[in-house]
Length: 237
Image (tube, rainbow, N blue to C red; front, side, top):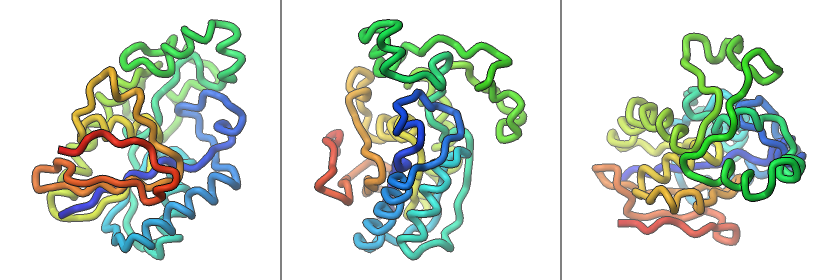
């Protein structure tokens, strides 16, 4: 029975500064590094042998993956990086302080942009500081200018089916170290979470979510390895 481990990256500098990060390549804080190592220690304590890991092309997720594998004494595990596991693109909100944005546009509007399933923020204007068109990580890719959780799921799921699901079906234990919204997309798919409920699903930073899957990749068991920081999980079965 394969096990899928989902690990949200540790605290980043812009998490600390309360800014909309999205696709901006912000590094981990010292606290974020500690959270990543703790995640790896929990994987080791649970006796989980990881066969392969997947992450985004964003530094905070890559470093979380590497730090966790190192702490789990599994640094040798192959790691595959792909932009389709990136965080949700926050469009024109990118780089803005969340509290200041709420003061400008109103708490209700910002909540809609942040938490609704299918309402994206305003588009990011081309040519600005956070235009990723010239970033070589995305060469040849059709890039969004903003994303809702719904459109994030649209890009995550094909990669899931193409790259990750076949490994699990072959019986491998897989670690996906990524971001709150790209991981939320995977959880929505696996647990068939309704559109109006998935926005309420929180994935804590640095706390591995271990999901046992059957041959059809349906969850038969799920638990956070740090039970003291566990969030409510969707129903299994």
